[in-house]
Image (cartoon, rainbow over all chains, first blue to last red; front, side, top):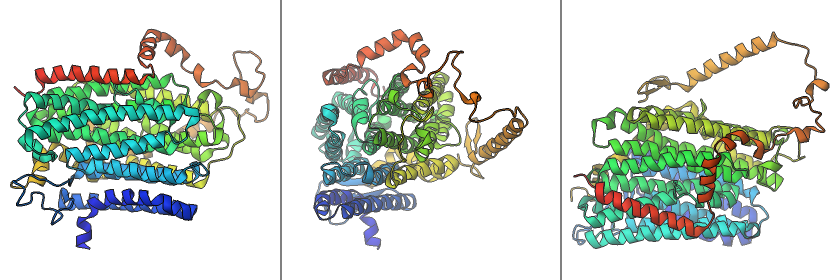
Length: 518
Length: 119
């Protein structure tokens, strides 16, 4: 049992990967068997991510050496002091992100059982879904810069395939094409940066490179390449243009999972800022870079959302806007890192930003699932053609209301808790930032009032039924977590968010977890 | 900071969702009491339930439903120059997406070269 526990980080990535490749074979034998197979994989992965959180909280950062003589010998005696193998480095922030990704994918996978039933290539859909999950988990758990690129590519390719899944008279395919182009450009630019670092420091391990970082002119180039490429993959303004296309045209469950895929890139952006460059860089500059992106994302995202009449595009713009809150919170933390202000309010700003990651994954995931439910029944995503759905789709309406109230930061839902943390801490940093964040929240509420009125209120226009149970179960999973984190934010803060923020801020601990006393 | 009884202590105060929920339920109860003592002449299935649209005759309930593109029309009109500028840059052309990426990367290269590392 003890031996098994040590392999949890590897199993979390390997299970969806192998399960995914076997899915088409299972699908040929039995469709129901394939559903059970996929849900089992997702449930096991979810359970392992929870176990991993427990391990990290009780035993500290977990390292796992792929193909090593032992699972934790990061620096073999004959390697010249360099961690040569692929090393998974799972601190509290990584474990937090892995749990977030696995939870939304579990809900999305269950939801897909009926939402995608009868579509052609269903087994391929689940294969890509599992590969997408594996890619996300690898991105947030790897401690290797090149290996991150590999998982980024796995995730991007699977995501592009899933965005194009519905074809949609070519429109979905066009959206997938744009996503593929943007992902490839971002990934190649990132890879170029990795190449520069490898040439300079003879290492690909993040902790190793961080420990050798000299902040040369080339390193400044890498800073620009990494931060901008990852900000684009995270969907922040002014690099967000692909987001409404991709989220808007993907199937509902995939749009929900794409939110966590973007968050995996956001994780990497935060990771390179804190753990790779850290205090050696000018954290005021990198912090304000994140804050600026955050402000632009919040305001441009929400104002663009207000004028949308396509339910999925509207929600996609809100996803951009909400990413702004995370960038703002963590950006304030980064800008104050190493100063007295960090302990006064910087750490809380980071906690707010990180708490918003999981909250956003849950409520935006839920909102995309409700949008998918509406489209499933009406066959259109045009809000102008909707109305009166609350008469017949009562559960979907309640789920939508909970998601909408949460994203707008209305108490007692989870969105309020994280936004409160961001408002208060950023106010102490700069009051204008806090005021903008509150105004954006008001506009978010206004936007979702529009959706609620257009789609669910008014006279009964369509004689439709509620969506099937599997779709309701998918939505219910995310709803229950929204309520749980809303009513008991201290659980999330104490066991997930607080340790994650502290782990992210502590570059020395991250480096020593891999390098040890070397 | 996490305090006792599900209370999250913030720099300027605290947040306790359970207390908030209790206060909210009490407010709902008060609202219900006030409402129950009000006008009782409302009757379902009568003229009272017909939509009123500035005195104009409404042909059907379906036509009275305000559609999405009409909501916040005034807000959007008031911000027309801002929205014109925003729409202009949202071209939908992937070449422009990449151009923005190149532009931002170039800008950040200058910023990081000037102020990227602590002096």
